[in-house]
Length: 257
Length: 261
Image 1 (cartoon, chains in turn yellow, purple):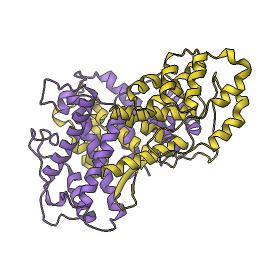
Image 2: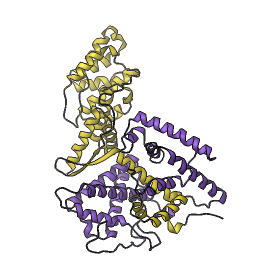
Image 3: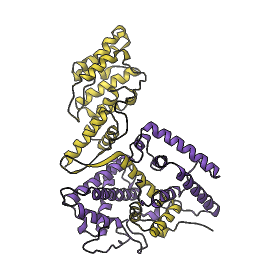
Image 4: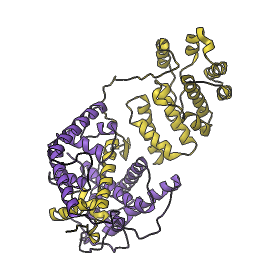
């Protein structure tokens, strides 16, 4: 006996929708499911929509904004402990002995408006701590970081673009150069610079702020789909950046109304 | 289901008008459209919309748009998963808002008009994304339907059919033995291809990503042992497995929709 799914009875889009919504009777459901069990293409159609629906449920939730209008926001109820944080260090250039001063700088770090780039922590502490081994840093890199610290972005861009860094120092160079480029509106260049940074291997705030700057750069140069995709990823994080990303999404939704 | 006040009958659409009707005109075509219209009447123009009705409306909109998007993707081209979710979410929200503020009144439309509208919204969203991706390639066969996409194009031998049924039966039984959360997590990983961090925040899982990894590891081990004991090859899922599992989990439990309680 040869078995073949009956092509004349392939499921329609509407039948699959009705099936998933429980709007079919038992007999109709059984007929469709029997066909799905024997027809890989129709089964795949159901599976694909099942996957999309589940991912949508996991990633977004419907709610009401302040004006009572329906809105969608990333789901923010991931059950992580409030203060749980895992920091991964992999060959970072910033010495751990500067952690206390860096923490102080973060605490005093001025806050910009949502949707904008933030200043990275001052590299001066890095330079001070490493003053005993200043010859380990390329002079151009140090000069570029100082220019950034002095808010002279044009000088910082000019110097950091020409500086040479190796290993972790290259990540430092790219992170600060990318920040300067975003803050001066040179988004295409910022995308090229930041795309090459392994941001997830960097400690925060450098790693997370670099991803945020990359989002701003992508949005700024019109690459909306990539920007939205990255923003969605950031919004799923249970971090400061995650909250900022969710605020940004709400801001974008409000702008569209 | 609320009765349609104007008594319109649900009729199938002509085969070439939308992806909604196959060759069998006797088959019911899109009851969801009628349900959408009923819910639209309930939520339209109210200061405080019924939360349950809005949730049901949202479920219908996202399911229908996702299904139409999958259909149109096979004709016009595929897009990234994230972009697909964006389109479904964005378009569903736009339609929901337009229903609530009265700009679109589905209860004043026929079922075929409602189906056609959502089909076109999904298609246009897909085409816009493909243009952005610069990967808009329409297949030569512009009359493609699901029937034409049966890529198997082969007949199954009796031996293979028996083997497949044995595997499916064993898989249903073995997956059914898993604890509900383990079962859901496994389904989300295997059939929805969701990473642990997404599974963790799914309302039916609700745990830490690291715990998800543990759950999945144990589920795989349990399934491997169970399928091996049943004498079937546990390494590959055969066609029909998802349909059987979906049926077993969601239809027989009486829920009948794809969101487990």
